[in-house]
Length: 345
Image (cartoon, rainbow, N blue to C red; front, side, top):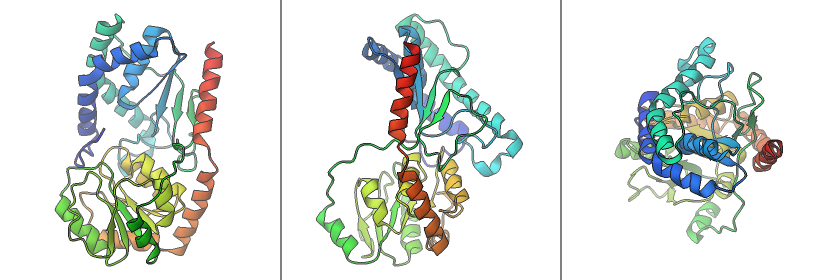
């Protein structure tokens, strides 16, 4: 679900997400129970996770959690919903419990109402913690914490099968006409000053060749300078290896695709777990320290692109990309699910 750019406070983001899930809880639970009847297990994720866990309970099926960012508590890093720089290390583990308790309080009333109405299940007083949890992020970006329980597994990025995608002729021509460009795109982020951000991007790029995907930003692409080429949705696994640097919002999927492509990132986080992924890339030396979207100025963007141009940064990005391309997160997840089913049989 898209959360507006200004919702980088955990409470505001949690409320926005809870409003969606709470409105849909009964319909989602009814549909999940009907669809999963006769299946071997339920894999559930995101806003529908609690619904999926409840459906598994109702049907007596093994549940498997799936996530794109870490939720299992650890002492090694703070909750991915909190800006990393603001949490003292000794509070890392507590920060996970704080965020999950906050989310649980937001989701629980509507979930329990749906459980009673759809499945005649008793109210759930505590969150689920013992079911298997599979994570679709790379151990190269976030190594599995040593204090995680055995039911939590880091699989690697879950990449959809490659498609026979062909670029528009205009994009091919632009790429062939000069040096590798800068990619700029903020995905589904909305709610920021689009006019100001457009000027920041144009001034920060400072005449370099750039591929720009406006996404949901509302940024006006009319009359962009000639050094910009505007694209719509384009497969990241095709596009990013052809870029010199990827400027993005720090969503889990885009972060992984940029790192896997072997090119440096410039992360402009707005909300949720984006600050977490920005911090991970900076720790690995393949991105500069992030500046939040609502504070980004043209000088910040120019300095960040200059950082990404450094030879040692490019070398680290290439090495990280090679390491990630050797991972097969989807195969590891399938293997884990098969083991879970064999144990449950």
